[in-house]
Length: 197
Image (cartoon, rainbow, N blue to C red; front, side, top):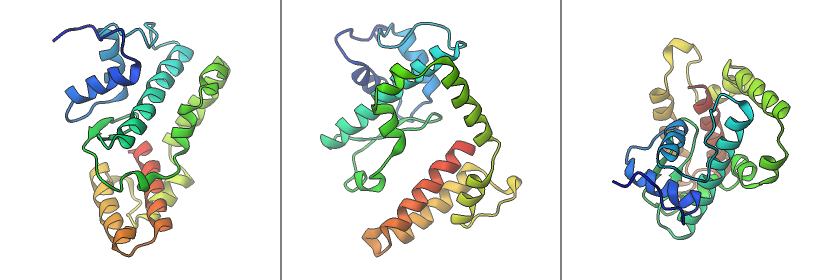
């Protein structure tokens, strides 16, 4: 295996190569490390201990992932599941586009003004906000209640949450007579809970 990625490829194409090699998916950190190891020129090769470098690296990666996801959808060539903890290339399934019509994260990462205009103090605020959300709060509680889950922390794990989410999606999917708005609420609740678990 060649350890250098083709310099003619843009970052989205380089990520597609790496994700095809990782059938079970990988984390954002693993992708960044693989890009660095393969000498990609599309991300900063600086320590991620600097908050602004970390933000810019993260932003560039997610911008490329969302561009890749849209390209794969339009070509009906696959579906890209994107979160910071797990990124995975999945086979294309008809209807998967409709499950996430409006995605605020997609909008954020595809707007390059955020990359250009974000300063170090902005990154500090983003990190503070992130850690507050990770400690729990009203949004987490509401998401758990929407899925009808026991809210005692020791009774919950991601596998249990995903199992309940799949049950409810199956029950409320519009193709099976369910409501689109209910399905969107379930998707949003799952996105919230993935941040905590």
